[in-house]
Image (cartoon, rainbow, N blue to C red; front, side):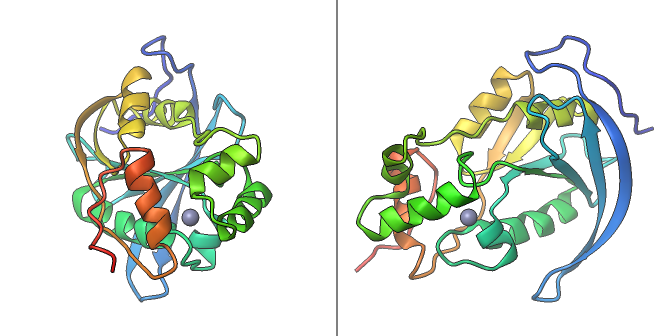
Length: 217
Ligand SMILES: [Zn+2]
């Protein structure tokens, strides 16, 4: 039987607990539909309102498929083509619905620098910097995302071993250090558009993301 529980000193992440869970039917603009069990939490390290979405047979999956997705207002909500966040989120919901697992929706916009700063970084990118250089030019780290809350949420959900849906080796490394066993990392698809090809190329070359980009002419 599925139980939620509090962390008791396993790993480095402090204890968090499920605060509430509620069912939310989902329908995407392309018509794809699923049903999420949405979890809220108390005791998360950064005090932000992160969500976990249980999809498919999340109760029965031996090693649930887990996608930590960092919030991207422009991509997730408005369909911005400057990044691939919207298509990645859409893909993750479908694949996790099929396998059973969780989307962890993490409120760390713009690789953790915030929404306005992300838009400032876009302006710098229009001047020729890549996505990482722009963050640094604004006085931020190249990537300030922190997966402590993600590890806390998994613990609170009783999940210790995951199959990680990600192209980002940093997520695997951080979760591992936080006491979550990543049994396997499976890549997401590649969602290329004319507007995001430079962004994806920077991710692949600057932070070792495993992304197979088609040759650019
Ligand atoms: Zn995005």
